[in-house]
Image (tube, rainbow, N blue to C red):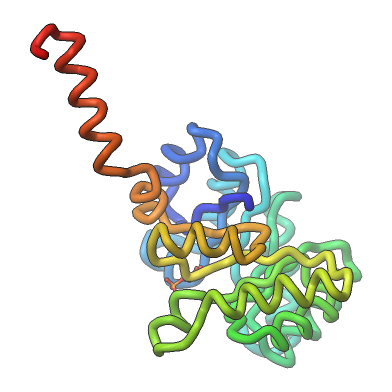
Length: 213
Ligand code: E4P
């Protein structure tokens, strides 16, 4: 499983990208608004730093405007992936953009059947939102498992991005469930580094080196 980072903050991306861990970036309208910027400016800035797929989301909801916006977003850089919501108009846009050779990431996926529909429309990626499903006491990771099985059974090449990741257990479980990618917020990625025994071990070795024990 590959890692993407789920943020529109350039400093967070810069710090993590330097470690060679992440191979792409996802943004959404909430993350872009948090930075007080416009989506095209944010993804252009990210594309100057990261060599990999960068998702920028449309804000329109009707076919004509979504398609126009999607084409504008895609024109920013060859690595841009247009993020489209899982709606009927959205699937028409995905179909058209895939015919134009533009990559798409279908967002707000909450069931395996939605993922199958998006894949058939021509999506390059589907983004099932694990955390938001868990938030309403359902099994978010079960959806990833189902999609991974379905895509194998039917030879579908659309890649699964486990999204709405809330904690390190989600990261491990998404990998075991067969997700191709997990898009992980900065703070969760940082938590994945940590283990108390690592900290204790470092302290012990440091003390030994300094001749304290
Ligand atoms: C996916 O690409 C979204 O940006 C994101 O993972 C949504 O996560 P949230 O449920 O924490 O907003």
